[in-house]
Image (cartoon, rainbow, N blue to C red; front, side, top):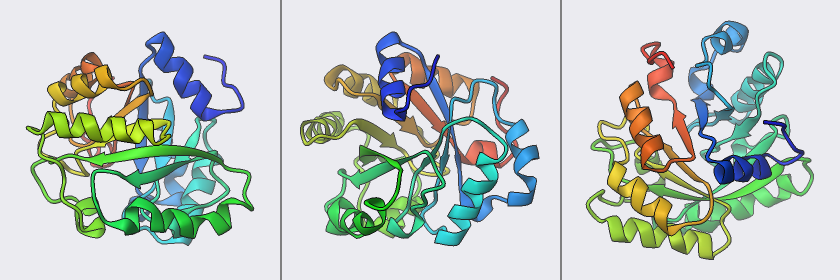
Length: 239
């Protein structure tokens, strides 16, 4: 696929054509910059994007990680920030996350407002993203930091309505997240229902630790699957 000047447009194009994307999420707190070249050589062959971010990463660590990664790969590097301090213009784009599954104003709008002073001075593509935390069977970092309750996976209608509310309010992507180290990934039922309802690209992450789980997410309708913990552990499957 020929990349345009817009990562969002590339994602939209891939979605329209049914081309599945794979992103690896790198947590700056667990990333060693000096080992960037070796680390990136281990990426699954089908990796299309790199996400960088974590719930507790320091700003300088995020910037250093992105710089080291950019020096070793031409893959698009997209920020997946835990808060506004993690934003750096060294990346290619930013998932401008709004935790629409929760009701804590800090992560619905306040962190976003705090980021604007930086963003207006940066040449960084900003992609409005509706972030939906679903129950992955374990308390994850997002749950703890945001002080919000994940939506139970049985409440499919509520998840679908939340995703549609995100789309109707102008989000360009919807991200279904079971959380880092989830025991239960987002179910095929949930993915399928959300995909049928929305008309924007759907990202799915959390608990995808096998080729079977990856295939299930794609089959159900995920346009991009995000892997993190499984790859960090060195136990990820061969793609």
